[in-house]
Length: 483
Ligand code: URP
Ligand code: ZN
Ligand code: ZN
Image (cartoon, rainbow, N blue to C red; front, side, top):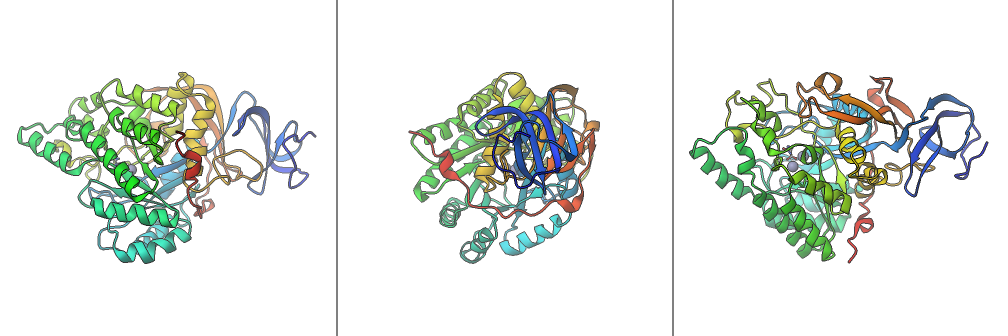
C-alpha cells in the first residue's frame, strides 16, 4: 500500500475508500484514493486497500462538498410568510446537489432578544438536518443589550457571522445602527454580511411605477434599479472603512455594484463579495414571461439586463467576488402562502421575494462555469467550498480535501448531462426557475462525514446526522486585497 500523502490514523480496513477519482485538493488535482475512518479523511494515496465500503470514482471528480452560507430555511420572510423549505427538505435537497454544509439565517424580529431568536431557531433545526449546519444571525434590532451582552456570547458559542439589511421595512436598520454592528462584529472577530439596496430609492421608484399602473412582475427590476444597489454598496463600503471593519456584501447582481467592490479592494479595503447562480444565468427578461409567470423570478436584487451575467462571471474569475451561494428562499408559485400571497394579479411589490437554488447551485455553476470554460476546476472549488469555509470559520475542518478534514465529499460526473425539471428536485417547491435548462456535471454521490447522503439517484441522509457547527472567526486575512 502506498500512502504518499502522509501518515494515517489507522491501518485499515477503513470505513470507506473512494477509489480512483480525480481529487481536487488545495494545492493540486490528483488521481488517487480517499480513505475515510470515523467520518474523517485519514489517507490520500494510491491503492489504499480494503474498506467496509468502496466507492468507485473512476472517471469522476472528487470535490469537497459545497458549503452554502446564504440560504433561508424555516424562516419567516420580510413579507411575513414562511419559506417552503425547512431543515429537513432544505438539507436533503442541498445534499442531492453536492452540498454538505448549510448556514441559513436565525432571524431576530424587531423588539426581540437575539438570544431568544437564536434559541428558537435552534429548536427548529434540532434533529432535522441531514447535513452539518450553522446559523448566520440576522440582526434587525441592534440594541445596546444585543450588541454588548447577547452578541458576544453568541459569537463565543460559534455563531461568527451576522447579517443586516439596508432595505425591507420589517428588518432594515439605519446607517448609525449599521456602524454599531460593523464595529461590534469587528471587535468580536465576527463578519458582517449586508443586503445592500437603497430603501428610499426603491420606495420612490415603486410609488411612481404603481401610480402609472406599471404593476406587472417585470417592473420589479425597474423598482430595484441598479443605482439602488450601487449606492448602497458604495455606502456600506464607506461605513465599513470608517468603522475599520471587514464587510461581506451578499448577492451582488450588477456590474455597477461590483465595480464599487472592485475599486474598494483596489484601495486595500477588506470587502468581500458574494453572488448567486440567478445572477449568472437569469436576466430581467425572465420577469417578463406571460401572465403571472414572471413572479417566479421576483427576487432582490433582481436579475439584470442581458449582458450583465457575463460581467458577473468576469468578477468571479478575477477574484473580485469570493463566493457563490444560493440565497435559497423558496416560496411556492401556485400557493396563497407563496408567490400568490396577494393573488395572481398582485402588483410586483406585493410578490414575496426569493427563488430556490440549494440543489442546483453547484450543477449550474459547474455547467455554466467549468463546462463552458469560464472557470477552472480549482476556482469552482474555491468559490463553492474553500472560500466559504475560510470566510465562515469552518476551515480546515470543512471545504477542503486533506488529512484530518471531515469526509464531506461530492463525487462528481463532469460529463453527465440532464435537463432540469422540478420533478428531479428534492425541495418542497412547485417550480424551479431553471426548468428545461440543459446542465452538464452532476454529483453521483454526496458524503457527509463519511455517510452517504445522496447515492444512486436517491437521498440517503438521516435527519439526526447533521450537527450544529461551532465556527471560528472568519479568516479575513486570506482575502485581503493585494495592492
Ligand atoms: O429576494 C431575496 N433575495 N429573498 C431572500 C431574502 C434576501 O433578501 O436575502
Ligand atoms: Zn438579501
Ligand atoms: Zn438572502
